[in-house]
Length: 140
Image (cartoon, rainbow, N blue to C red):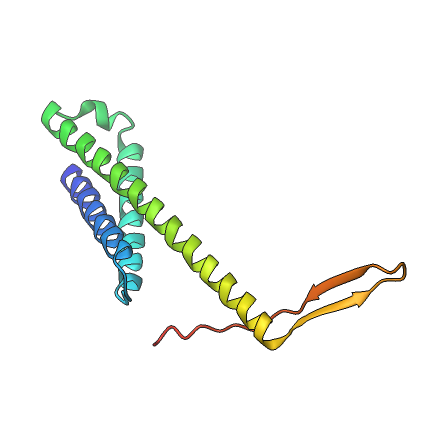
């Protein structure tokens, strides 16, 4: 059971490192959807394995042989490092995508003239922007 746990941690670590490497390179990466699905499966498996170990023997970590415990701790450390980097790369990608969509929306509003100005009862000028429909072609 511990060997399976270590194997799952190493697989998840490797997958996160691979995803991070792809995300920092320019271009399309259509295989990232598969990568995300695989990450979900591995995380679910890891959670199930640790839950089973905790349920069967709450002190399983302390009961491990020193060499096996060192392997588990090394796997946890590697997984932590990979997940921290992966989270940062994903955060930057989401920020970049949001900024790009906002820029496209602003340009479409500028070109289509969907901004309106109205005068209020007391002479004030109010700017309003209508929602601009934006759709993305994900199958370039």
